[in-house]
Amino acid sequence: MQSTASKRILTVAALGLVVLARAPFADEHGPGAAPNGISLPEGYKDWRVVAASHRDDNNTLRVILGNDMAIEAARAGNTNPWPDGVILGKLVWKDARHEAWEKAVVPGEFVHAEFMIKDTGKWPATGGWGYARWKGMDQKPYGKDASFVDECHGCHTPVKDNDYVFTRPAAIP
Amino acid sequence: MQSTASKRILTVAALGLVVLARAPFADEHGPGAAPNGISLPEGYKDWRVVAASHRDDNNTLRVILGNDMAIEAARAGNTNPWPDGVILGKLVWKDARHEAWEKAVVPGEFVHAEFMIKDTGKWPATGGWGYARWKGMDQKPYGKDASFVDECHGCHTPVKDNDYVFTRPAAIP
Figure 1: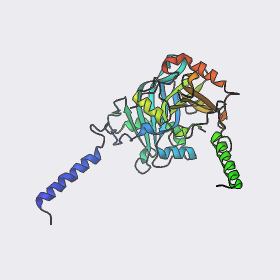
Figure 2: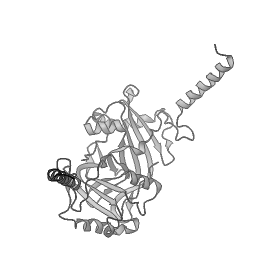
Figure 3: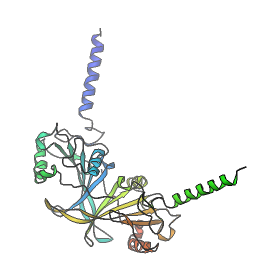
Figure 4: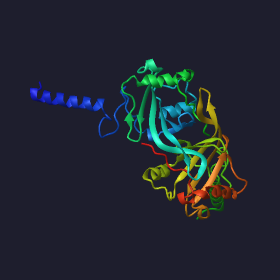
């Protein structure tokens, strides 16, 4: 039978673990979570390439990356729907002109990193996708509250027939 | 002391190894080498992203990848000059319009994969860089003979002050 003192110690330790588990990126370890609770995916800058794009309407250049499951699914053509566990990440820069090659559009200022996380059990209201975005080089979470996903999902609805994903994996030999 | 027969066997085996070493990609194992002897770098499609670009003059969308040494150098800002051992790879597609988002330029048909391999001892005449390119999804080596590099290096001469490299690593948090 445990003493009251040791029970208190265990309770404090357990509370500490809960706090650590709930806010893994909320302090000096990295950016805070998005308002819907999604944490910045670890290691995304080392992910492999799925595609790229250049938008004329907002003058941004983009590279679309995928976690290992996404790359595996993309290479297998298993993308409609994308399997649970897939994460797609998009790195977005303002476009700029190359100083030595005027006809080349190149990455300028970094705008944001945004993600789609496939978990059909967790995000049934938004086609099985959890959305999140971090702005700028200091990675400020986007959105005042969890309703920011309405904007994300609304914009992706035109590609409902492609599992709500604009990106089609680029051909790479 | 070896018999004449065993010496012959060893000689044939050694010749076989030389042939394998000189033409690792010349048969069913993959595309042939470039006319300057450079073999297609292994595993490049799994390399990490350095930058992207979109060229208006020839309507192509590009992703620039780097081997591990290139990524390390890029993240350390150690790119002028890039260190020996670095390989930069560029994946090039014809640009196309997204069928559901007209203002988005996306990868169309794959054009070629091209590489710059830094080895100052091996390629002193072209700024320390070995150039090679493989065309299309069937990866046909580019160039009739080794003089094709004059075209590559000539085009890169305007960026001599940036170690002959157009690409500047994109900011990624």
